[in-house]
Image 1 (tube, rainbow, N blue to C red):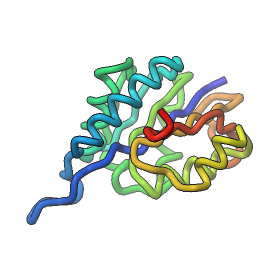
Image 2: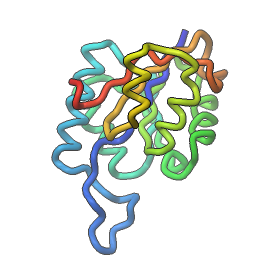
Image 3: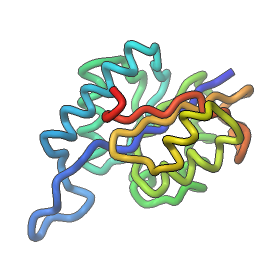
Length: 167
C-alpha cells in the first residue's frame, strides 16, 4: 500500500510590476496556512518519505512552512511542477514512486485535475469537498493498493481532503 499527498501551494500575493508569476511569494495568510497544514499533517501521521516540490517561490515557501511543523522526507525540486499538466505530474510521480509515501507540492489546475483523475473512489465527504475545487493549501490524501510507480487513472482511493478552513 502507498500514499500520495497532493498539496496545492499556499496563498500567494499578487505579482508586483516587473515580477514573474514564478517568483510570487506567499502572503501572510499563506504562510500561516502552510504552518497549520504542516501541524495537521503531523497530527494525522501524514508523513511523506519523499517530497516533490515545484521550484516556484510560493511552492518552496509552502514547503518551508510545512517543514517547520512536520517531517517532509527527502525533497526534490522540479521546474516541471510549475509548467506540466496533470499527466506530466503523474509521470513525475511514477518516475519517483519507489517510496511508500510521496508528497507533491504544486499548482492548480494540475493538482485538482490529478486528484480527480487518480481517485477512482473514496470517502464521500472528501470527494464532495474536492468537487467544490482545490483551494490554496488544500491537501488530497490518495491511497493506492500498489506502488506509486504504477499509479494510474482511477486506481486510487481518496481517503481525505483537508483545507485550512476545515482545520
